[in-house]
Amino acid sequence: GAGKTTVFNLLTKFLQPTAGTITLDGHDITRATPAKVAQMGVVRSFQISATFPHLTVLDNVRVALQRPNGLASQFWRSLSVLDRLTPRAEELLRMVGLDDAKHGLAADLSYGRKRVLEIATTLALDPKVLLLDEPMAGMGHEDVGTISKLVKSIAADRAVLMVEHNLSVVADIAGWVTVLQRGEIIAAGDYGTVSNDANVREAYMGSEHA
Image 1: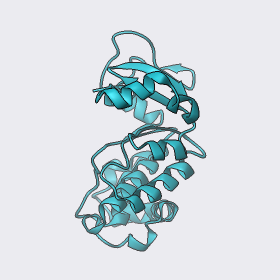
Image 2: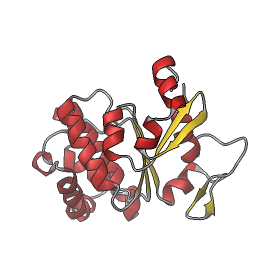
Image 3: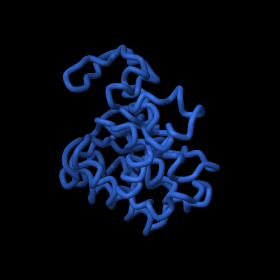
């Protein structure tokens, strides 16, 4: 492949680099643990939706809120722990447009809305840097539009690094585009610059590894 998922694994420290450095807010995190990097605000949303299907939409977000609120060890002991997290969970669901489904099971959501729920659970961790791995993969046109608007709103107050193949989505929401081919950066810049780059045109028309 091009190396996109490898980049995410390096940033979240599930892979260790063999050369170079990785910095976050001026701090060297090259040898940091995955837990430390997560504590510093680097949060990853995976390509495959990762929610708890047999919990309600609201409870999925309340579970995610445990860690930043220091309540992970208390979650199963008392319903009052859940109740404490409800206002923030409901706020996040309103933010992403899922407040109408909060009492339904995650399993009953459409595929697109499951991806929205997953983004809500990542936002519960209050990320400084949000890594989105193909959040629109497998979606219909309407769901793609919904997620695109959501990503744009999220990016207003945090860094978002997104892997995406849909060029219309990239053109719509990306402030900076980096194109990888076989593990190498072949172009970087705004969409207009990158889309007219000869190397990018060759990669998209002549190779499956971009």
